[in-house]
Image (cartoon, rainbow, N blue to C red):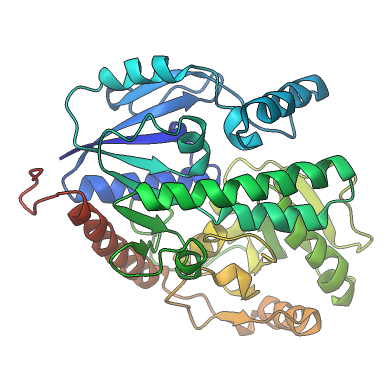
Length: 391
């Protein structure tokens, strides 16, 4: 079977964001099932595709809103209002539907589409109606948009996200209705998208790496707690604000916290132990240098890839309930609480050395086996035969 994996940004092999990690996990699972995969989408500027022989690049594009100048943001907003598209989809209209169709034809004979997330499929809705499709819903996007609308102070931003939520809700409904099968990244997202039936959808238990993690070994601890993420993304920022505002003030002044990743200007903490370190060269080495990992999600939908990474490495963790979306197998060295005081106490206990590392290979094997089984369910719905041939 040959499938066209239609996505906003094609994989470049970096695996620096949750979106990229999830994409790699799904594509790897398709390959393990014997499916030939051709990826089509845009490339980040200056970042060539990881698998150029099986990738169709529509051009280079930077769709990050936070880095765009005000003039570009206003152009996107005006185009979205004129076309009736979502703000997130209109940024991908760098080619026409006709040009996209011409590029699709270059893939040769294929059996169906994997529509990866709502943005690209929404930008070119209708182009992918000629063959059966599987829709991969990374999040319940309309719920994330309304959460953001309720959290921002700017009237313009509130208007934009409220509009986005309204359009996304109907768009997600249409994409789910058209698809032969829907993959979500969290169990609760299936009902939120109206596809709770096992005949219509499955939640994918993801992994974050191509090969199993190493066996547990002694670590050199350099700080008490470490967090890494893209804190400019509003759902992540909501969690960071909660952590800095409600948990950190309850920690001792000598408790050392390192926070890596992009942050918005003005992000700070009065706690003397908090250090913002920006981009780090090796994310895995960074988190392994901490005694405990705070998993602090408070908003959004879909799965938290940082949670999966932490569990694969066997690191002690303290997690909010939201951070455990999409997790069926929770290690014993993770404490779950939404109470800031209890969260702080659990961090202190883990940092004191009273919580041991776990064998992350067990978690990894469980996740990957479940992922492969769920992917096969979706492939069956679009005519896949177990010998690798299309029906």
